[in-house]
Image (cartoon, protein in one colour):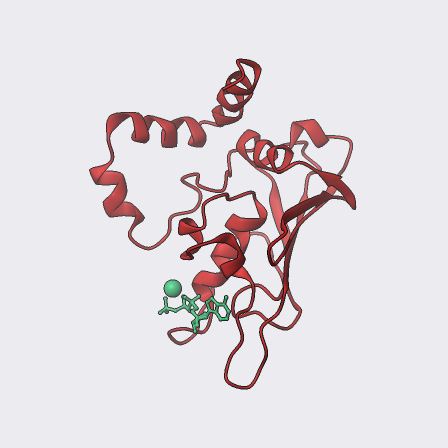
Amino acid sequence: MVQFTHLRLTGFKSFVDATDLPIETGLTGVVGPNGCGKSNLVEALRWVMGETSARQMRGGEMDDVIFGGTRDRPARNIAEVTITLDNTDGSAAAWRQFPDLEISRRIERGSGSLYRLNGKEVRARDVQLLFADSASGARSTAMVSQGRVGALIAAKPAQRRALLEEAAGIAGLHGRRHEAEGR
Ligand code: ATP
Ligand code: MG
């Protein structure tokens, strides 16, 4: 599994100012009072990994991830999240030639998202497959959000199978098969 080393955010939800968080190996805890942005951080991770559902971001549309302004600060028009990964073990197999990977996603109001990998523009699909292959997909079991445990219990067998396949690291293969079949 790829190791996250840094998370950088600008204009993403409540993180209006540029924020750079180093992520050490082992367990990382995020603590703080209600509403301080803990869940927003987890959503930033999910988002940069290629999440396509605004609902998963607790929003009505994807532009809602952009800082929407407060009483004293105007709204922004751009949000950007960058994650850096240690890929020395080659877990992100398609990008094995890079020991360090920097993936960023940027959204501009009304213009959609743009992804970059080590500075070069890539498709959303490339980023999604990278994480699906390394068994840490945007909706994999590696990310369990509030209420998810209950949803897992109530899930239909096919939905539960999709989660197990993602955990087993074969979700990327299914994605490619569907793409090859034109689905
Ligand atoms: P809890 O402990 O209650 O779970 P939390 O630390 O997880 O809280 P979050 O849900 O991450 O808190 O943050 C919620 C805050 O983020 C709210 O104050 C909300 O107004 C703010 N927020 C969410 N989206 C945006 C946005 N687009 N622009 C500005 N602020 C936002
Ligand atoms: Mg929360």
